[in-house]
Amino acid sequence: MNRAAVWVATLGPIGWGPAGPGTLASALVALAWWWTEPPRAATLAAAAGFAALGLLTAGPADRGLGRDDGRIVIDEAAGMALALSGVPAGLPGCLVALALFRALDIGKPPPVSWCESVPGGAGVMLDDVVAGGIAALLGAAAFAMWPALAG
Picture 1 (cartoon, helix red, strand yellow):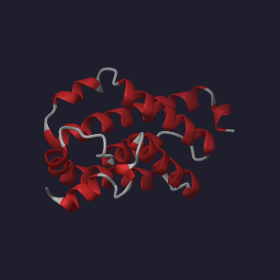
Picture 2 (cartoon, helix red, strand yellow):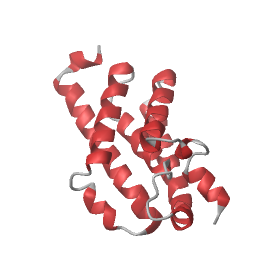
Picture 3 (cartoon, helix red, strand yellow):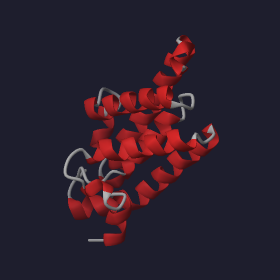
């Protein structure tokens, strides 16, 4: 097993938590975003960075830990960062993005569920990136229709 790949794919100790490592990883990305309020370009760059690292490490981690093992959470980090790129800075945007992303990631409606058939590390990453993209679009639409949500 490639321990370095597993360490990156599990985001160190985050993926090894006793319950809900995907939700924990998503919440930590959301919390960091809320605290720092980076510009949209930086949020997209973070999503791309997590996705790139995930593409490099999720495959070896997937082979070492087992098919789409829940301890692999770099996919949640990529998807959550992408979801955050669609909402305004601040706590309301953070909470909306987190709720939408987790609902889509856990519920796996089409087209998110279609990504489950992609094998290996790309499949591990793809469903979360698609869920994050949809969450970004839905979040942007919600704040466009109801700007008072932003506070």
